[in-house]
Length: 203
Length: 89
Image (cartoon, rainbow over the protein chains, first blue to last red):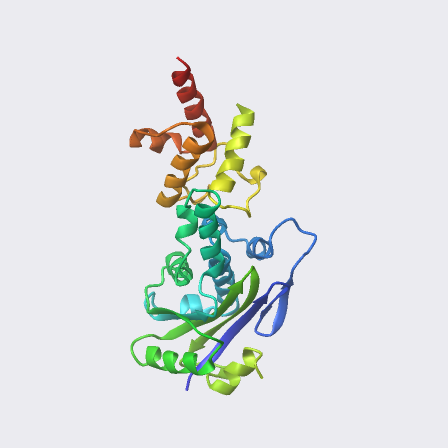
């Protein structure tokens, strides 16, 4: 039996950790919503500003989960945390921006090109946190609880001690993100289809 | 010179797609390739080379020059000023 020991949600308007509202977008701020969250975390990581929305979202939510659950930092070796992410739209926002850079400005941008794959967010998380475990990014037609259940079961039975999972649905700058941390032991929600769908807001 | 530095900051924000950063947040002497500065990497070095040609008509032909020129906004402005003076001769 495994458990979802912490989770968080982010939309364009609000951010919840373990079901508690922790931040709401300040529409009067000159800063983007993700920059507002970044500043609140008091992280100093300038590379954040170069990331696309997909990577910024994964990065910020991971930092929030780390704050909420110290096990993520303290309880595992650097190769024991697996990363299992998915979404519907791959890296479409960066793909479109890169296309514009060479079609309209006649200057293909290397800085945009490096984000034209969805799994780059996993690389960003691995680099920042020095995590060297398994990682996988899937593009799916919709959030599929059974995908996470089946894949995490394999990961946890083949050497991973825990799995950071995410659904990062981002298109046209619209954000619908859900991250959750699964551990073999712990307290909280059992890691099964029903509870995962419930936490994801599907039932 | 101050105008050149201001322009450079705007051009870097545009060229490197750093829309979340304000011109006022980039210090003239901040190290561009340091995590306490802008945290740029080798991909961004390519962008800076493109920027110099696109906005200032300067080609960086000697890699060792780029390493020194791209240290900060101050060194980039100095480099542009020197290269333009050389071109004018």
